[in-house]
Image 1 (cartoon, helix red, strand yellow):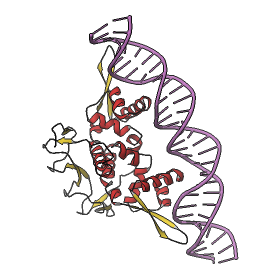
Image 2 (spheres, each protein chain N blue to C red; image 1 turned 180 degrees about the vertical axis):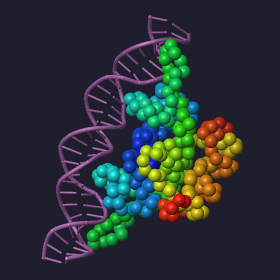
Image 3 (tube, rainbow over the protein chains, first blue to last red; image 1 turned 60 degrees about the horizontal axis):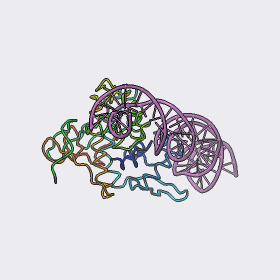
Image 4 (spheres, helix red, strand yellow; image 1 turned 90 degrees about the horizontal axis):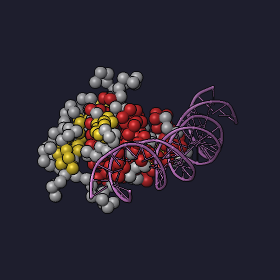
Length: 136
Length: 136
DNA sequence: CAGGTAAGTCCAGTTTTCGGACTAACCTGC
DNA sequence: GCAGGTTAGTCCGAAAACTGGACTTACCTG
């Protein structure tokens, strides 16, 4: 987790990724939407590309223009972003802005829930502990 | 999400929270385990307390000693931490250290999966989009 | 009484981040 | 054909955050 945070834990990194998930793949659009200094965002995108989370792809020559796309590893950060969004919606709402609503493929509003892959039950704060038994 | 990251997105904040989830509630123990500068960690803990995520509780007078406990809001960050851990385990493994294994209440190794609360299906990277229809 | 633990604070130096201005290379409408 | 807009950055100096290490206070232990 420490290593994960070294990559995505820097300022603006996860916000930039959220934008890419939403389909906003261009530099200027991200700057507009998240309000990061252009400088910092450029550095962050470079490091995300270096980490194999984004891919910088040219979508036009003349003039040369680039956009950022998620690699497979990047797509797998979606759960992180969804759980962060949910927490924010539940605990920091009413500070003005309406939360962003996502529609899941099933037709309902997407609300992210974390379950145990083995038993399918929602994970409660106290329902896990560091494993002691060998070879679990 | 931006507001969430202003609170928990600063350096060491999520690592400190992970330690509290693991039951390491004392300042010195966190310093030892995560290796943060004492100064920075102290500042981070203050801000987490201020944000209502942790609670600073005295566990001994004479000498006065404090520990940090999760509030309800703090406990609800568990999914965020689990999804971050899982991503790291899958994408940054083999850098030496064995990943931490958690045992779920069901007896199996806890692997966090994010599902749609409405339909119960795992959320795929492309299976959601910003809602357009009103009142979803 | 020497040594250890716990929870910090203080400091000075380094690293990041900040906002704003700037560049280069096109397109668009008039 | 040229004023204005768009895109993807870079460059700058100032401000903020982070860093390791030393220091403090108040116990407890042998």
